[in-house]
Length: 251
Image (cartoon, rainbow, N blue to C red):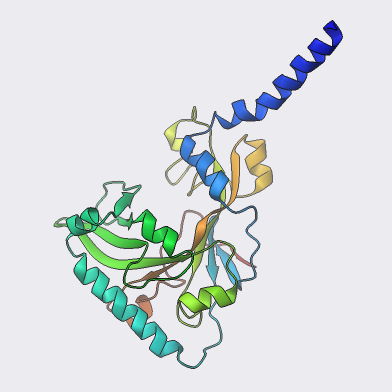
C-alpha cells in the first residue's frame, strides 16, 4: 500500500511540474502561447525579416486589384478622418496596445470585438485597429490595420487585401522570459527575450528556459491613406523592422 501511495505522489508531482513552470511566466505570455500558432510554416509566399517578422511576398497582379485596393484605401481614409480625435476611438471601444509613451511611437488602438469579427470577414469601415502616432500635439491618427487568421492561405489573404499590392506580416519566433528576469533582458535593443529579443530559435529558447511561441497573433496589413508617397500607403518591405533586421530567410 505504501509503495502505491509513493508512486501516486511521484506521478502527481510530475503532473504538476508543467503547471508550476508555466506559472513562472507572465500571464500575457501564457495567453499568447495558448492563442498563438504551433508553427511558422505557411502556404503564403513569404520571407523572414530580422528575428521576429515574417512578411508576404508580392503576388501576381490580378484584374481589379488596383480598383479594389483603392476602395480599401478610401474606406481607411474615412476611418482615419472619423477617428482623428483619439477620444472618439476610446469612446467606441478602441484601446491602446502596449504604448511606451515615447514621442514618435506608433500605437495600435484595438477594438477587440471588431478584431474578432474580422477574423471571419473584413469590414473596412470598422477595422480591428486604428494606428496613431504620438506627436508633441498629441495622438495623430495615421492609418488602420486589418487582420486575418494566422493559418490563412494566400487566397484568404488576397480576398481581404490584394497580395499584389498589400504586404501582410506576422510576428514569429517569440521566446518569452521568466517573470523573475530583469526588464533589460525582456525589452530593449539588447534583450534576450521578447519581441525584440536575440533569441529566435526553439532550441535556444529551451536552453534559456524560455516560453517558445512560434506565431504571435495572426496576419496583419497596415494602410496609411495619407502617406506622401504611393509606395508608403501599404506598408511594405521598408516598414520598421525589429532588432536584428538584415538576415532574410525565404519561406
